[in-house]
Image (cartoon, rainbow, N blue to C red):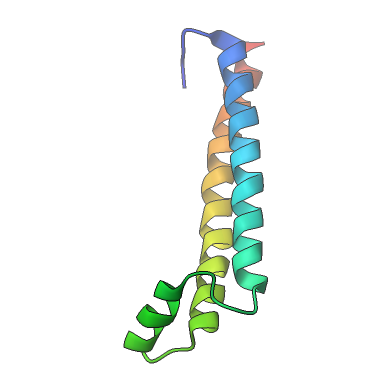
Length: 87
């Protein structure tokens, strides 16, 4: 993660990763805790797989939170290491 902006670039990267992780986690939590499908296409696709549309959406929210969290943690760690190495 070497850029021409130096520490400013790494600081911006840390901020971007943090806020992206924040809204991604909020979206996953809302999907998981919702009691009804957000979009009609969820119901249609869940019927194809013979599952409940709400359960399908909640599973998607859990996957979003779990996998998204790991990716953002890795990206944030890389950005913080780059920032710390610049000082």
